[in-house]
Image (cartoon, rainbow, N blue to C red; front, side, top):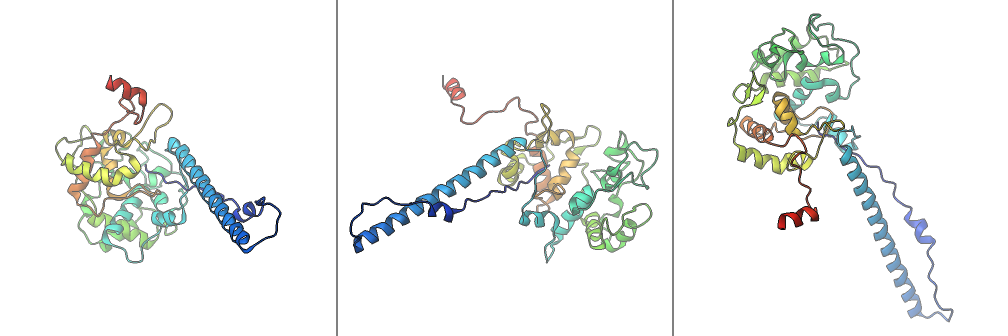
Length: 329
């Protein structure tokens, strides 16, 4: 989902540029006034060159940002501060941060923790199931985005495993959940997920699970109309999520070629997954999460996102003079 971007700009050597600049002045005896005028002129030129250099750098950044925005779905490097936000941890960890961090590990632990992707298929993954490869090491692959496992949205289809969900441990102390996460059915070494990180997962399972049946229809996998407050969802989206996704949700596109994939597209097809991203953020990218908001507010945002465009058919280009003239005519 949401990607971040680091732009590397090499600044010009301002000292060497200024040292090459000379002022042609008439040859005559130099007075104190001449000296002051010369110094003022040099200061003025220095100021102009500095401003020009700054403008050039700003233009380079803007053009590079625009080019990358068109690519949109490509992975981007993080700057040091963003890298720490994505993969680091605060010194004093709030419960909300811990739950969201555990939720990202549940989603995709190697992206969340910046670890090597596992090789092969999870040995605990049922041989009768259809998936294979590293994805079988993800918690969500067996237990589902809705946490219901074989009793939820994964009760049929290519992700069916027959494994139960995790709602049964909701409300239990994290310390009592930890041994389950280290048993033979969960072959995660401490090199994959260390004990402190696994405690975040246990905290997420204990205090962060949400029953999605009141707002997502399991049979149709669609957001239930009227299950949230659209106006409240719109207000939150426009003042937070829109910073990256745009007001209509189409600023980020994860599609390929002519196949577009916006947040509205995702909400229409995979609302249970999107609700996880709203609550915990997407692993491995500098995305904000709404874990500090109430569950109802997250449902409100989910309802609003489900109304956003899924394609480009009704895209309006702001500032197109020809279209404006047609409308006015």
